[in-house]
Image (cartoon, rainbow, N blue to C red; front, side, top):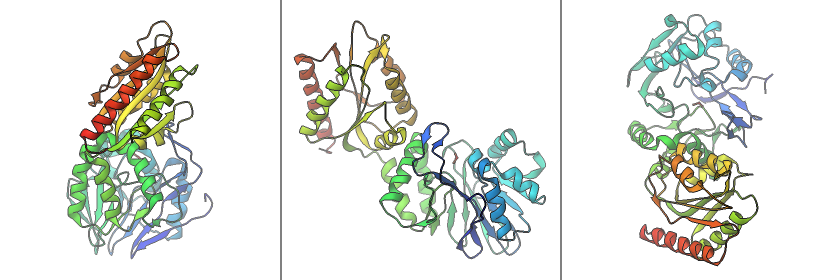
Length: 398
Ligand code: FEO
């Protein structure tokens, strides 16, 4: 792909000129990318002006330049920057160099970020405010300030005449596919849900507000800056409404780690006890867990139980990692529990609780065994399963 330009016509005068990154397997040195990702960039030719929406990641400069060449782009008047993060802004400086007449169009906060991150001089910017239009002649862009999806400076760009929304990260998915305008379906849903869990879930209340704004536009197409374009906007809007709603599922997410089998024995017992009560369980052995899968499972689970042995008095470090991740992602949990074991002394429970400061879920009875679990511990696990079943019944999800 690096040597060959490849553009895709979206509609009259609007082209995808981004880059697919098939073989990227990690984002932010944290998030696994089992299906790669894409950095979408779009060029819009108006009768008087030309605008480029978002530029690609640093690593894909050659592709963007070749794509622009292949369309014989002689002039770019505006480089719209919806978001300053470098996977979308990285090559703005190259575009400014190749097209010296071009100006970066963005909001004041994003301008500040771009100046810090990319050292773009002040005189290369035009700043815009919420709902401000920008004429390209026969086409009009409108900017919608939408902070915290997922940085404080994020905005959406709307092409009024064609009713296409360019929301950058919002509604995106880490999915590298040549099928740029994908069919609705399970693959697209899963990719978008995983992305929502990893990137947008901590901001779900703000996301809700932005969805309401988007619905008011009556968009015909949503063209994010990662993953495929949605030709049926209601597919992704409805999915986002579901994920950001207060509704939870009859599920227990159970991240666990075990050193000598005591905690594992308790986990397996609890899984059986919960399944026997009609509850879906999603266990994650933290030594082999893809954190994207764990994040996705947290989107709509009613209950989380973290299970860990004690190591050097505190929780096993993998459990600390899971608790920290949960706390950062702020899922809409209703109930929370801890299961684990210790040898001679433990501050495992207090340490995990101390990490989960953002989790407002109701606490369930904790079950911590001294050594290998015994009859009383199994009875406690049965009581925990009973309590979860009762709580789920109370929510009318069981
Ligand atoms: Fe895809 Fe926040 O960058």
